Length: 189
Image (tube, rainbow, N blue to C red; front, side):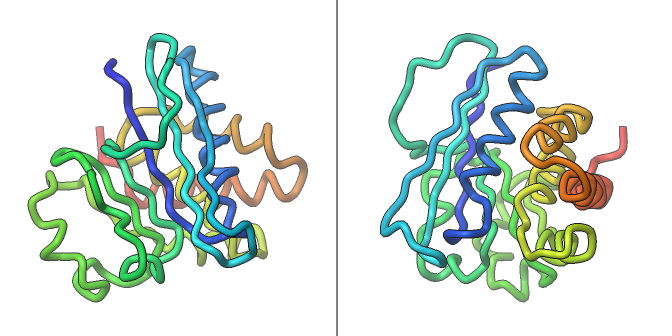
């Protein structure tokens, strides 16, 4: 496997940094090397936040932000017009957007129409989190969707990473949200 790089965009308080950490834990559980790190602007609730995760089969020596991601995860659609979230995205990359609207309704259909079939998905992750966790924190659901769309990680690893981060009922709820998102987007074998 060549290095796979993920850039996550969201707002402070949505679990963007935690999402990258859980993604790296899931990769570690599969015997891979991984690194997760954030990039903060003004560290306040609601401010744009970017977090990064690299996954590889060999040790990772890079330490700079990801400029050409293999995947982009957008946790907050209000960033679509405010931040260049797709900048540098590789032509065969993956895109996950947290929304219940379609790509056309979001104004993204034309911008992402050249991406491979199945690589661009919209997931109502916030709604899944509210239903299963009781809070509008979409990070775990988006990780389930990431595993389903990319096939890069097994769902069991994502589940274990979520349970490592969240205990008890919160962990159970986040796993249910992640599983629902995974099932929604997973490509049949």
